[in-house]
Image 1 (cartoon, protein in one colour):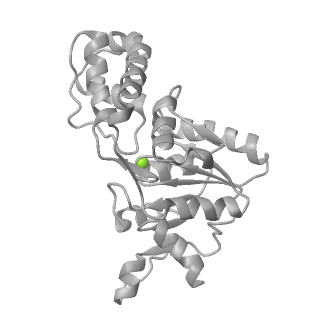
Image 2 (cartoon, rainbow, N blue to C red; image 1 turned 60 degrees about the vertical axis):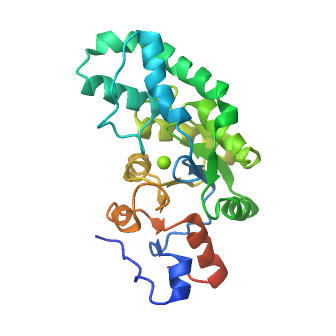
Length: 255
Ligand SMILES: [Mg+2]
């Protein structure tokens, strides 16, 4: 490994602060634009509305059910989740691909119809981090495997919509790195062609998608992956939460 892990907390104050790694020379807070993942990074859902919409939309559009056991949701894209479920069920691509646009549209409609039932919880330090980075002049965008209307709905319901000026979504991209490439083009449109772009995400898939595009990643262990597991993928920065990462500014700690 080329990166260097931080020491585990040695006292109560450190335990409260969390764990942070920043690769030497990586200026995590001086990037021109940031692509924030949504689920597990900015917020989490305490409802199953988006999750259930995969199942119910397949059933309503295709007239039969498909199982999602064994399909990776975290770090995947919405069309990628459907593709993986159909392939796991050993359905021919010619069977499901013609239906995919209608299934995705049914998902958008179902989630929008149930918006009042959605229960979203912001991750620790999200507001303060967005205030801080905006104050540094960064362009803030979303880079998510969610479909666009579902992603923006979650952002809006969490009270975060005003922070973000652009986004990359999965409507046309079932491969995460392709979505990040698209989001990066959007970032350059907003921040200038020469702007540095950084991915912020909670899974190894965020890190690999960033790396495929030559981008650094700030990994946060607020989703399903722990700090040490994320560290094994060698992100440029890693923190137990955005709150912990922001603490390094307040304490003057750089790595
Ligand atoms: Mg995520």
